[in-house]
Length: 414
Image 1 (cartoon, rainbow, N blue to C red):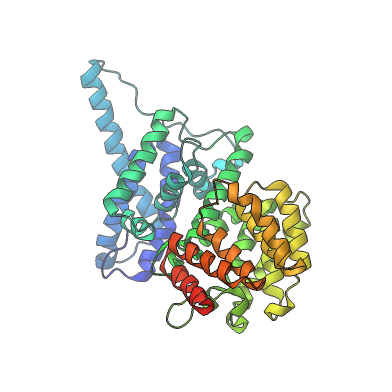
Image 2 (image 1 turned 90 degrees about the vertical axis):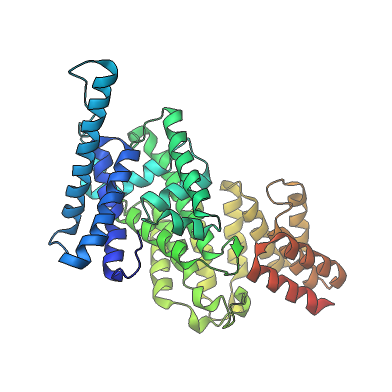
């Protein structure tokens, strides 16, 4: 969507309106691929005409009108094609009936509908993330490709394959019914969580963070929260993002080098985001059933509320991770639990908890396991073993800031 020289205010507005217009179009015409093409044409027309002739009084209605005109042409073309192929004069048009009467089908909820649709059960996490950023986040294929450090053509093929997988699955590309919604909401939140994590700590490249991705994840989660304001896990995920992203400015030095949590200048943390996150996390925990995102948010809140690293309430964090391990089958949680145990009971306790992860295919070759083991070995006074683990972690990471940090830690032990 981004055009050279385009007014940032117009660009921001178009990015905000794109999923609303696409959701409305899909809700009416039920053809995601054609509707996306129509909305993209409408956005291109806006970037060409609005700077020249001025912004319309109702930008959303303007975009919807243009997209609807494109879809009408598409429907007529499809009818004509079917007539030619079947030689039937009264060929049926594409389905345009409204969806059943339901609060989640209202126009105001079009963004939520798109989120549900993009988190389709036929898709892998990677495909769902790409499709979500394209359809709901309003990012161009080029922007998504840049975020994941792949050529634009490669990302375009990935998004195309995702759409084809949905078609091949024969599962309708539509808002799931009431019985499916709860399970699909979990997928929606999971995708948003993954998008945020990739933005907060980029998996590859020369920058520690991709703020465009983390900002987009927060924006989309706010949209879900606005539509489902009393769902405790939605509260928890938004709280987790805010409490984590509040530390953004303190995570890197002036030269872009990684600054670990215990060495960060906490005066640079965003107190407004922390206050909002703590309020959301507290409200979520009061609502009853405790979920993964609520617990992660509570842990983040304990970190953020400590004025100094040495003031961190590690026993409380250890207890929260203990609860989290009972409901989440996630080796990263086990890894973090080991760190908390080491802070409370000493590095040997943490190292013992890491032992089972050596046989976990999901993590045994991951650089974070080697990095945590190196940290605990260093604290235990085993310098040579720690040095080897720091080097092993540096070899396995594809993030340049993380690699440089691990190599500095190794050099300090030589």
